[in-house]
Amino acid sequence: MSGLVLAIDQGTTSTRAIIFDADRRIAGVGQQEFPQHFPASGWVEHDPEDIWQSVLATCKTALRKAKCKAADIAAIGITNQRETVVVWDKATGRPIHNAIVWQDRRTAPLCQKLRKQGLEPLFSRKTGLLLDPYFSATKIAWLLDRVPGARKRAERGELLAGTIDAFLIWRLTGGRAHATDATNASRTLVYNIRDNRWDEELLKLFRIPAALLPEVKDCAADFGMTEKTLLGAEIPILGVAGDQQAATIGQACFEPGMMKSTYGTGCFALLNTGSDLVQSRNRLLTTIAYRLNGKTTYALEGSIFVAGAAVQWLRDGIKVIGKAEQSGHLAAHADETQEIYLVPAFVGLGAPHWDAEARGAIFGLTRNTGPAEFARAALESVAFQTRDLLDAMRKDWKPKHGNSKTVLRVDGGMVASDWAMQRLADILDAPVDRPTSLETTALGAAWLAGARAGVWPEQKAFAKSWSLERRFGPAMDEKDRRRKLKGWRDSVRRTLTDF
Picture 1: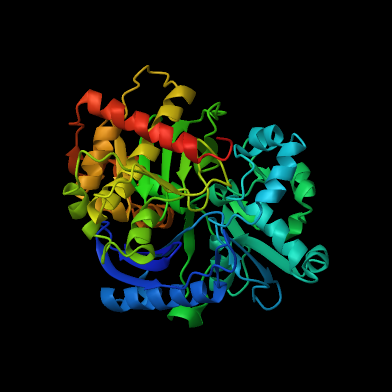
Picture 2: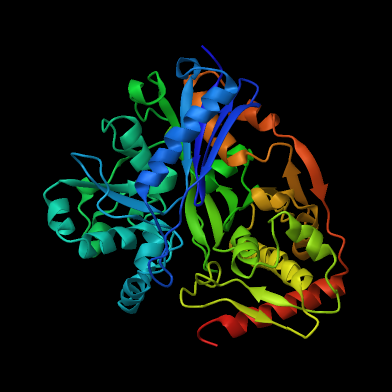
């Protein structure tokens, strides 16, 4: 059988399809952006049909560029933007409303209501999550309540719901499979990560019928066969993982204590805690890193809502740069005497603050502040937020072997900037490793599918194939680091809504 594997990487602003060969090298890539919709302040939506069409188009492009046919593909792996939800008609497959995106904040009042009822500890104990609009269940409840007739239709079994992976699986298989994997399920607020099942008590609190939701499988499992008419042949879907967990797998962070951080639209850091389900005392998330052969591996996760999106804001919002790649070069020429802090709470603050109502702010502006200082502040904000996550993780989890040294493996669009990665190492006071292959999210999904198909190596051999492109070591003076961190923490304090 061919060692070719197709990875569908369905992201927040674009979809990519990548074909990897048996040596995990890229054979063909297709990429397509799709529109973002902002119907109200703090609301973010996608048209699911735009996503679906982008998946078909990019898969066909990847096949063409790889000069192969669908019949040559051994398996498909899917990775996706997590927490974004779709509700669709079971008979036709048509969505009843736009997808509500993970960044969306419209369900903040519902979360606040549940917190006031004292329910957050219940959700945290069962799901590892906090009551925040970020997660999926509040979005599903909103759709059932606000789309005319949706709740009654759901109760009659006429509708289905799921994260983007489930919607794509349904479409790719022609409606024969309604399935998801444990990592995506663990981000919904209604999946019990201790018992690995949908939780009846939590479903009742949101009035979500269990029949609406997909079957939950291991990350490497049989998710069905694609319709022959879509790509030209039936292809088994054998791997699924949410994007951050897929990146963790692609970075080969299989051992407890290993940590990765992905810098895309947002930033998501995961620390592998093995079989230890660590209940955070510092408002981090406890999540499923992956589930293989029925065995669950857990992680502590810190979610930053705005990372690369801050650079996009520089480009598209205030137009101080023409291209995202210019940010690092510009930051390197900033006036070091100006202490400018950008707190990018454009859609609230994530871990460890979890303030849905906070909004972005800039501190330290002078008459001399210009594009270079804005660029540096935007890139430094990502480093500062990552440091906040790392500090919280160190407080929550002490490795059994006693080694508290951390090496961060990084991926995502932002890590191409040497300046940004050096500043990250400086602020963390820890090494930052950039791998040879930056396509770690797609690679993780591909490995799940390829290993399941028997055409790619098993876990240990795959981990050994991970290769380092460059290590960035901390070089900042400790006094400067402390001064910068103090300024950052003061800026965050002033931004929080309870200030």
